Image (tube, rainbow, N blue to C red):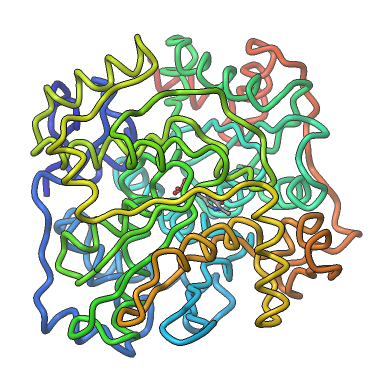
Length: 473
Ligand SMILES: *Cc1c(COP(=O)(O)O)cnc(C)c1O
């Protein structure tokens, strides 16, 4: 399988190469040159199969034989064995044809675990085969850091550093990052804001001398490996509810558009998905784009659903590429307009293409809290606020004839304040996800200063300075 850039100027890559580079050199995102198709019979055979078996069947066409089948199977087994539910992503019935797909049974209670756990293993495997080592740098406002550090702790060839704004993540989120207990995983508390952390990571990549010396890499949501992993649960959920004989719809709490785009990929592979419904918070740029065809950037508003506080949804570019009939010149023009004029207008046929598969709805702050309360009142279920947003939008688009699956992306214990405000209840983490108070924290407190953080990274890399020196020699 070859991977091509949505902007058409970067060289096509193999799966393994696309896995390691993330962003394409022309600023575009990698997508498969053609969609692999699964037959009606193959999809039907997924019903009742263990998650890992379906995962192998869905992922292997994308890997295209570049990783040995036995190795791939074993990595998938190990990745999903870290989940604390036999179904990995169980369905919970909320009403007639109304389902929740719980994506939060992984080690950090976040849906990000589903992709990170396999991505880490795949990257480490490819690097080990090549005899290479890399360093990963990331910035987190709370959620992604924990999932990434936890996933990469088993990777011998990868040294991972995550920066977070000191004092501005929750206690639980900080402790998830600082108690990983692996000497290749580092949590860095920066004296600054999340934006400062993000800017610092960008500047590190721009600092060629440092970036090439340590082989700096990222694990953001545009990495094809992450998208691929997320395709799997659309298949397990839909087949459990009667696909491929029965159509199924999905509603997804959306930020960077990675999760819902994976649903679109499942549809391209042959899964009979009826509607894909985008749910956003007050950062409703995607809902407005679908309604008007105009994508106009504003400033990001901080909400009680921080994982959806995004203006530019990076993975949306992959959908634009399809809507443009895979013409990279159209994508380049749209992205240039977005960069220079902070908005673009989609041609009618592109809007129509997107509306053929997608709907969208936005939910305000007040409505979010009300919905967490309503769900608890009506069903006794405690939903995290991201999930509640999707549940509310799902009800607006529900078709009584078609099962609607709403993706539940976080355990409510990760957002205790909102849950308590809405329900009067304290959402406790499950026993396995809790972090005992006595577990010691390992964290470095660093100034908001790129050179100082880079020096720390070089000094504290388990591989030692020499490893990086010999690399560039
Ligand atoms: C990351 C995240 C999302 C958004 O997923 P995207 O793939 O970025 O659209 C939604 N909810 C939670 C809890 C998340 O952590």
